[in-house]
Image (cartoon, rainbow, N blue to C red; front, side, top):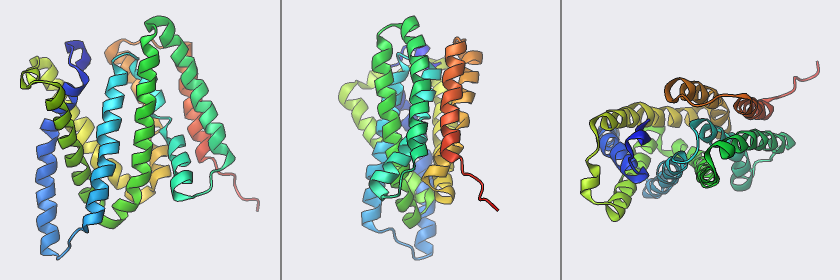
Length: 274
């Protein structure tokens, strides 16, 4: 909806962070004062790890995702992005040395067959730009998967709220540095309707979800948190049709069913024989 007003990706991200960062700073100060009263000090190594992981999850992933959305439909973008539970399992296997079951490979196959169906449909309607957009969103999914896996041990050490604040301030500063390198301050002058939408994006789809996600990872772990997000593609398809008047036909339906089936395969556990 915001791209209708011809904002470039980095300006959109800059405004998103300019609005949300003061909220994170205020919460961070409250957490700092509370921890100080309790005699709690965060170890420097965990803070540094949080800064780096935050850049992966909320700077790179967000940048890649919004670059992709310029040339593909919201429905295809969500399906690619929400294939990330399978990549979480892959990264968990690679980085945390946890065994990867055969069903993960089946889930990956189902996910990308579903994505391919919608990709072909979008490609026929929107042209070759869909290829570049798809690659950007796939990179976003990989970056976000890495973030989900790497964040768990850090959250266990410093807490979900502290992790979120530090990670988001880190990514906000990097985003703003990126903006001022490639843009002039005049680019921050945007139409009022776009600004209203950015406020919603900054609070409802940035501040609230980041704290909720960290809390979920803390309680459920990376894999279950990823699986719980399977409503994402279905909800996005619904809103894309209602709000953006995007087309929803058999390719979109098949793709959606296959991606959700892939997540179902991942979380399936046979009942023990009594």
